[in-house]
Image (cartoon, rainbow, N blue to C red; front, top):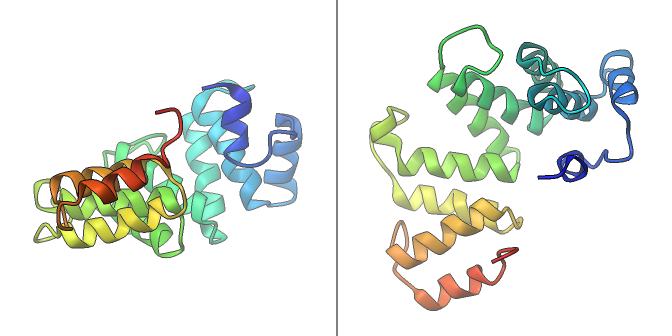
Length: 177
């Protein structure tokens, strides 16, 4: 993945890290906090600092930024920069919140939580129909992993009746395949 593409996730490819720092800290801009957090998490134009990344995601989440909420959840779930053990419930709470806000990556992950719920201890029971519902919401926003999951669900009959034709309709929306 190119550095330019990584910045494009945040639609801030034209902004240099020094400007992101200014926007994130001086202007308290939640989008810049997410983008700068991503830079620190991955060592893009700055030294990698996962604790600083988590703090920036947390700042954005406190302002209600769906991407910040999502990234904070991911950090909690995988103990990235938190200084603590993995927190599955912290992950789930934040992923659900961002999913309900319409954030496509979170919708996909929330679907995964329902599909793998019992195995991972997220919910009392697995609910493949609920999983498919969230995968579909993500896919409708052209989120590539969401589309892959919708294709898989239609192919395997997960939460929906098997339907190879519908799977193919979704498959053509995948990029680079």
